[in-house]
Image (cartoon, rainbow, N blue to C red):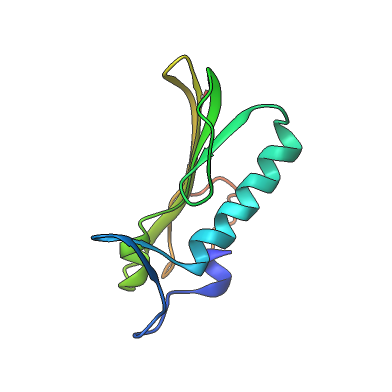
Length: 117
């Protein structure tokens, strides 16, 4: 999704959530895609998402749909979505797909992906 859209141009529209905290259309689109996958692949686990909110639970997913929104808005190409699964206040798995939008695609399906379980 990020590679297909590229970096924004000057004057890119973003909403101010709080001082220094922004949300973009890419944040919302990324979060929707992540939530769709979690609903299909991990049904029944609570989700706390940065933009839509959610519920805290003993076992839950925490989702940051575009870690590096400020970087993205400024055209700095290091951004990526992340999700972590928590159980009793302890992170038990983390998925993060940071990418550089100026590099060529890799033939490896795992380039830039970190998964801990």
